[in-house]
Length: 58
Length: 400
Image (cartoon, rainbow over all chains, first blue to last red; front, side, top):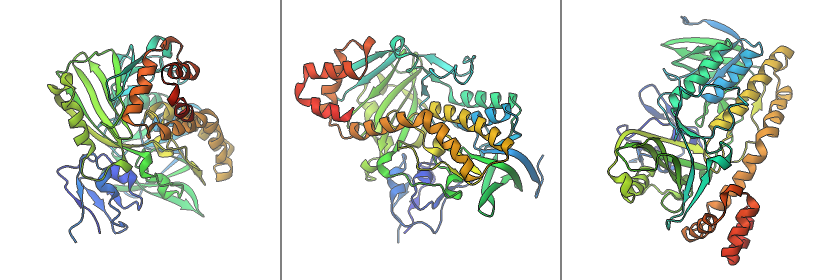
């Protein structure tokens, strides 16, 4: 399942984008998008220096 | 101004206007190639995502004479601290400019772009590549957007210089996933109103920054970039790099009263050199090709050196009319001859250093601190450690 993103914490640094093994995360003009290629591995939760990602709700 | 549906024609298209991309463009243009750099951000060099400590031992090689626009402070040396407070000092006088200075990274990136522009390279900012154009599998340019207009850039050779989060490499099919143990995730404040020795860069090893290190890079007498990097495989989501840094600052009285005037997050690869950095019609440079020093996490200097090689090679390949993968392998050989040995050596050393316990860092740095570092090299280091701790020599020799 996709992670939940708290955009208030996101610094748009790209750490998750470059680390995502599924290439499922993209920086957009004003947001960050996790697409359906996400395998739910959770790496982005750990890599984010700010803790902006958390486990998805369902 | 570019219009919807335009087709631009170039010899060389560089995607990414960081130091490696600009330097590739500089040397491609200097050697006669019609060159365009596109940068997705609206301003080259900004926002800064960097610790800003950099060696200055490469200036002659890149023919750079004027550093006044971007060196904020020259360093007298480096100090490396163990968790228990042991310290070893490396004097810049004997390190041959390897310690270098602390720079203004945004001004630096713009200066590298200026050098490219002076050679005739074109630049477009706020311009994103959205996909690579291919003909029979060969990359022949990119589709890009600028202020809501979509257009095409046709190029004989594309240079991917889009950094850690490189999409270009993935699109070209030369992407190799980085292992979590080879990714450092970093956080930094610029703190002002702090008490530091502003003539030294400082590195703090040990479990305060698991698998990485914390740094203090002085910007002026009262201000420094204070940050750290943690190995991704040692993070479980319970404590972020920011949490680690906040703890580090709390435990240093000289820093605790500091006030943050800037915050930087990011990740850096500390992996081995890639299997491949070329495909039909495309080559990669800089962080996109993972030429970051695995020990320091510094990527600028190898990116610059590789960028020069890439630019000179690109102009030659275009002039020869050969941008097929077979010919582009020459670029691989050129940059590997210059950079690969050191990158591999430092990767192996990093793999060992990451396993050291706090106690071992204390022992090693204590032993090193008694050496005459005017003559620091592998032999003097081993001798110093052997004298003090004969028992741990085996471990150290394995590491080195």
